[in-house]
Length: 513
Image (tube, rainbow, N blue to C red; front, side):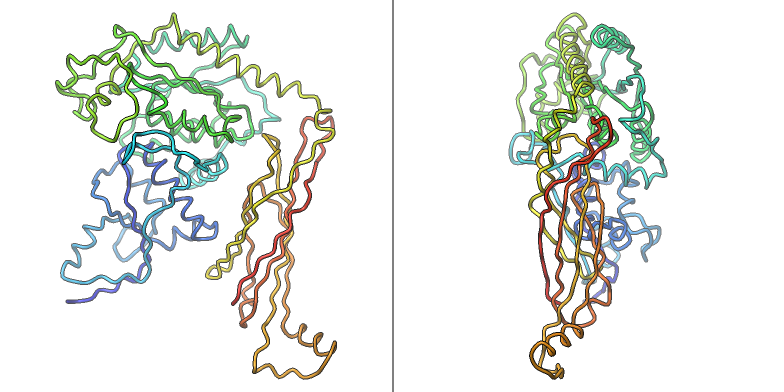
């Protein structure tokens, strides 16, 4: 058998559901970005230039291939740089054994927060560690890759009228009285807050995932910033929520009203509600959901739809009034027929009550922030950072520092001042011919073996990358880093801008060369 040696670096990926933009973001792109950050020391572009994506799945939809191309090596012997399918790749060498010089399999799931019913009923992932900072870095990466620019919004300086986004759906799970819903929502906002709410229609439907993502990014990074998002549950609503959280980090919370057809339980099916329940995101999201409870306001899925969207005759005559709890993925008939109903929103009952609650919470949050007395901060100091760790990547000459942020910085603007002393110490060997004794020998030996470099950094995220000088690796030795990290908070509520600093957290780590 002929042996074919593949010299390109390849990354094998099994995509979850590449024909749905929410799944593309949550299950593939965000985890891939996080994985690249980890294996390439924070330098995502380096991984992109190193790896060629090879899909192990058999999904042939071209809907999202342009988004995956962003994470794949631009040029290879295969031609145009597009990711390739393993089955197509293998076909070229069907009579050969393929040996890969360098290959990776699978992506990290640390950034996922929702699971879709594989092996257990659908619902939130317990103890998810996803954070707004991850969303923010990922969002900036996409903006740069798509050639877009943000408007440079600054919460504490710019004042804009409130802006809301209403998402409309084209084919299934539609709201049949959209204009009345928007009019009622604006009236309720005006009665609670006392100002006018500007509402934009947004229809994300697209035949190309990259054009859809670009349109979503454009609308969430435009000015004024989005303060309120509402519409029927769907993929685009979740994507807009994630990217709006990234765009508005440090500002007022994002207010969300998510609507559902009759018989659907938001706790079981909503990735947005799962996000809103995470303790560290509770100051970033104000969330409410509304579910239709009136059969007269529900229309069965159209018989012209795909059967996986309730099409055909399978839903005709079904009683969908009973609320369906979490189910296993993915072809549950009861779930499909409920999820793809069209809905008339009842504007005389619970919807209005929930809107009032949302807008009251939003108003109170703003008032609390506006009336904070700076005396509350008279004895405030940020706590020291914790859980400092080092990751040495000698292949790309980078030391990655990670830590957990101070426990009491809340939504206060803060950064980290970092001091690093990087030094080497050569371990004496049998070939070392330095002669002498006592202090004279020690001094001479240290001059011969010791290298040292100081770094002073200021970063906004709990991550820092330290470049290791190439000359530090010239001889076998111990490479040591001494690290001091200090959290610095800007108290914008003070009459004059001032800073409060935590105690230094000291950490040391070393590796043998």
